Length: 180
Image (cartoon, rainbow, N blue to C red; front, side, top):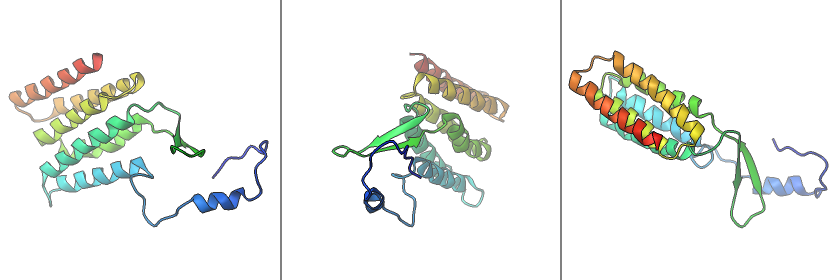
């Protein structure tokens, strides 16, 4: 839907001109919907973690990409995002993302199905570190709270002492960088 406040003088042919600028396709793309790309990467990671496939390296690759994608999203403020194209007068406003919800949707199932694999969980921790690299002050708090959740899950896992030290070292390094 397009909002029109009825106080502006708009040309009568505007609806037809707008329709001429809209392209409708049969498939969603990453350019149209950031969440769609994340959803597809999560699906691939979950399939890779399934007992029938059991390919943790593919899951790790997807988790790394998720961290990098979410890093770019973490510097967006809450509210609405204004999209413009250089050289045009058009502006599109789109509701922003709730980073807490996105992090939960992205990592919850991956953590659930991958919690027994040391390197899958380590990649989840590192993904949070990537997200923090560009996060706004508010989003840093959100990511660090989510890391607390991940850390609590890891503390309940059946890991050897050396594995726990590896997790702790990575988590402490990420928290140290976040304080800067």
